[in-house]
Image (cartoon, rainbow, N blue to C red; front, side, top):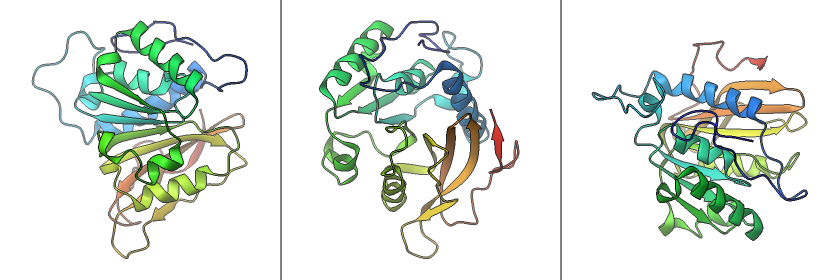
Length: 233
């Protein structure tokens, strides 16, 4: 397990102990970030002076963004975003041993000054427990919940009703193909904010579902590489 791109490219990351976490494979992680960057590229302004230490193009989509990594585990997803140029990442992980792994990985990659590791459950965070500690709203929220955890449906519903994701921001979740996530989640009010699924990709038994925060279910469609049609990675 390693950082794929950016300032910490190639740095190895400490893995889980036993069955503590189920880290995303480098192949799936690479595919996930490729999708996210393709979706963000059109809406992110091009900086006047590129950051020379980053790979060409990465800073154009990640610069200035706050990231939220839910069910953070080893921190691999949030660390990847920081390495690619994100300004900040809040890591949410309820397990103390896993939080220590995240802190070691942040230190090993030199990214600890742009991150905070929060010791609470995703459910408590969505209930507003850590509201004062968050760098919200977020440009991207990443989630790799326990495999086949049906609770992810409620998490998406709560994110659609809340204000953690900025306008045009993305929510990316990795889940089992046995869990069906809807194409649209709203807060229940007509013409108000919601999450529209704009990409779905399958890799074996794993599904990557990507949502964009839009004003209603008819806005925010992306058609650059097939819209929200499923496909193989």
